[in-house]
Image 1 (cartoon, helix red, strand yellow):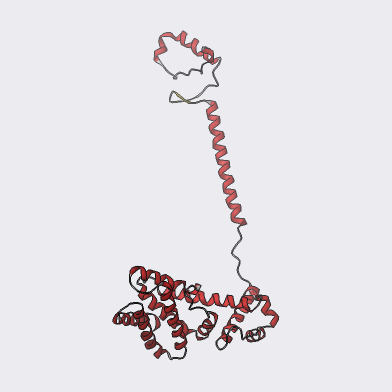
Image 2: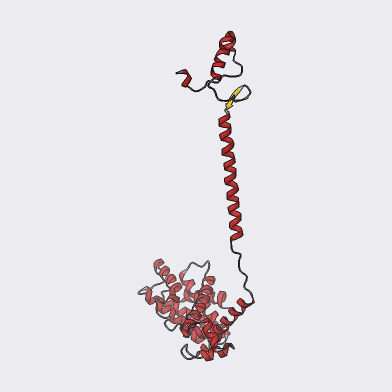
Length: 291
């Protein structure tokens, strides 16, 4: 039926209906009986009814409201986010006491094994009360674990920095050897402590040897070095490193350089590098790292 169909809208001016004004007027009045409120007109064309205009306004208001809610939520998050806490005097004092206990243990380990120093000796060396020790460490084993972790992180970070940008496995091994010797010459007490903190360092599977193992794996894969197995190569390298540390602690720095070249050349030659090339690689490593 005509009454059930959507209202029909006409342009504001249409010459096709000029010949029948009466009929046109009748049709317009007829549609007015069922049509919605008069639509908005622009340039003589109908483009939006009152209802669609209302929907548009509501949608815009809701979008603006949601945007404002999101912005408020973001501001609230920023306000509620905890600010970076600056250590106060008490925190700094605690850190200093903890480090004093670690330094005291290193000093005692320079001449004794980890089992020898007592908690009383460590506390006395750190100039704190015995009870203070237990405020920071449950026992000597906990102290030993933290101390070993500190030394290991320092040595590994130094080797990583020294070998940054170096891809040749033979050069990396040579530079790592020089880096360890350089560490010993600069911090002899920590080097001596390292020897006692890692009594099983020559074990190829020890975590402290993960970096050496990576260079060995790469060297064997490239055919740059040769060994019966990865474990044999890692054990050989670490054994030379440990022997070098023991010896260099008793040498003046001038003699340490010649010692490093000689011992490192033997190490590389044992891994399949020619004598001349091994000596050249070690001389470059000493000049770059150890001097």
